[in-house]
Amino acid sequence: MPYFRLFAGLMASCILATPAAASEPAVPGPDLTAREVVDIQLRALSDNDDPVPDAGIEQVWAFAHPDNRAVTGPLPRFKRMIKGRGYGVLINHSRAEVEALGEGPNRAVYRVRVVARDGGFHRFRWQLEKASLDAGEAWMTTGVTPGRDTGEKML
Image (tube, rainbow, N blue to C red):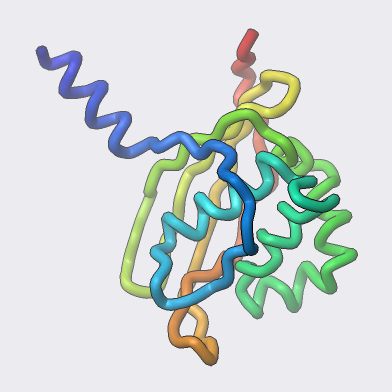
């Protein structure tokens, strides 16, 4: 019985992000939680070229905090960065696990572990802060650490 409770607790803290049917791209707004923003970005990257090439990266860019955009943009530069070393494993990954490390009223940090196309596991730290937009205060990504290979491999 204690094992089941432990397992259930772990599953509550780690929800798998799976591809979702793409309709209109999501936009930042006050109705989304920080966790939902991370999930939106991970789902988009898991099927990067749906409905058009790099739609996933463009969805991630839509949730990049203005301070983050100033450092990583413009969009063509951001696309090169995401496709490059440290982030490329996010593109078309097969599974993602998200664990909250800290959630406050204006800042949130998550540990993200993805299974890349090659079956390797990679860990990221995803940081978000609220930004003032015309629509209101919205969660946006301020930084993602480059992926670190955990040494684990799914066969």
